[in-house]
Image (cartoon, rainbow, N blue to C red; front, side, top):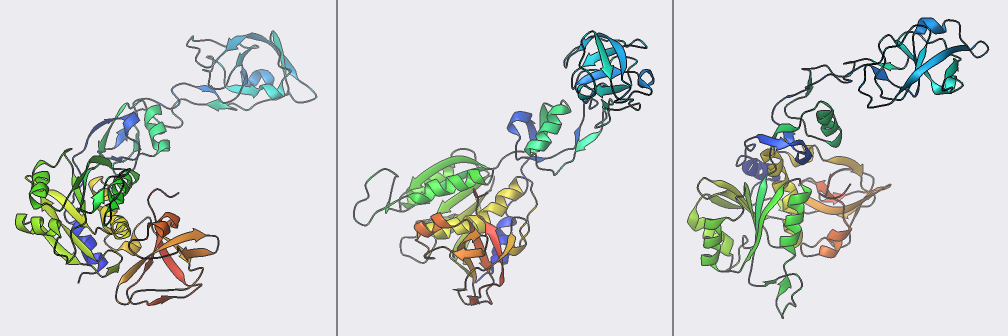
Length: 407
């Protein structure tokens, strides 16, 4: 039986970052940069005002204060977006708006609050130092500066920086595309009435949602009954040009485990038991030519859900160029809290307890069976209980993996 870390190692060995490509900036949120991003201009691109007020020569307001305002004639108004090149004559001022270009000769700005707000003449109660409330050209970013480096994730703030640097297209690792197939004669589509012995296929919707929540794209979603020929046909076609294939169901020890039967015939996929609960039966390998990574998940909904977080999520991160680690408890997403109450744990297996996080810590959700979706709907994290611990005591520290889609 494999440990969780050993199986994470095995699935991560199947994947490498996808080939980078040019992506329009508006489509790059969440992607990993594959090359440094260089500014195409200075930021700011010109000297401009940091305040609504008056552009002045500091020397013209020497001695001005609350009791001794200095009055200057107003040459006119300069609004943000004004493209004319204005000049400031000694002994005068321009009324100026925030972000508007500073007139030639001005070296300071007096905020409107420290004036009488005049249109033709303005009395100012401040003797500003040179540079007061002035944004100098290039003081933030210079033309040719590296503003973002390869390996950084494009967050909204970094996208704003790229846009301000006038970079319309970025060199990124694309989003991985995932083909999802659920298997089993017992499954019916959502919205259909299940007959006796049938169940609604929740795994398809769940895995597709998890793929998107992980920042990847769904290439296709398919249901295949327990029919080896139909599964072989689907594997040969692999619709949607996926970078990763996910199957759910048919990987345990049953007589009708079609996924295991077909993929063993095809070769390139191994099936193992992993010392974890839920989600012990697992499989991974590659299919197709050229080979595409495949991860086979258990059919029980909660087992499939937990397995996605433990094994599929890190593979998607690697495909997308993000950093990953083999040890689940060391994953960058993991947080630490305390057990708000005690609970029992499986012996010799890593227990992934569905928990609700609150001010007091982690509370197990009601019902931990691998078929209990009601409890899964309550949970917002998985508490990672090491294999050597058979009981978590209230007040002890526990590491938790937040569930995808939860803030």
